[in-house]
Length: 120
Image 1 (cartoon, rainbow, N blue to C red):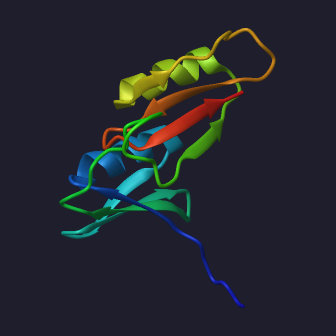
Image 2 (spheres, rainbow, N blue to C red):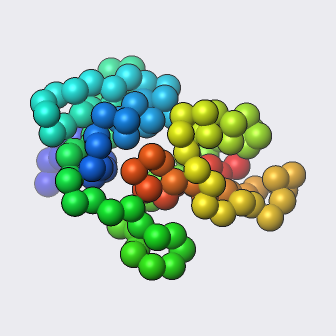
Image 3 (cartoon, one colour):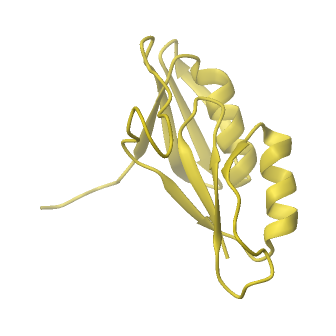
């Protein structure tokens, strides 16, 4: 198999704010390709895409409607990463037990409700 690229695609009922959120979180830019498709680029690479899914429902984490995927973002410093994620529109789903531990994670949701973790 000769794979030329791999692209993570997120569904969202409103793709524009979803793409803007991930562009901000990943330090990239959001580009509308057509009415139903946005790409998020970091440098020259396409980091992920967002497609229109009018019936998309946010997962109910940790119980209820299950998640289909989630991203883990490893950060150098959790406090500043936490503040930045909230500034871009994330919500906290589960706080870490101890932010001063050497390794840990907190669970968040993006604006469309997709869970992701900030890990350190």
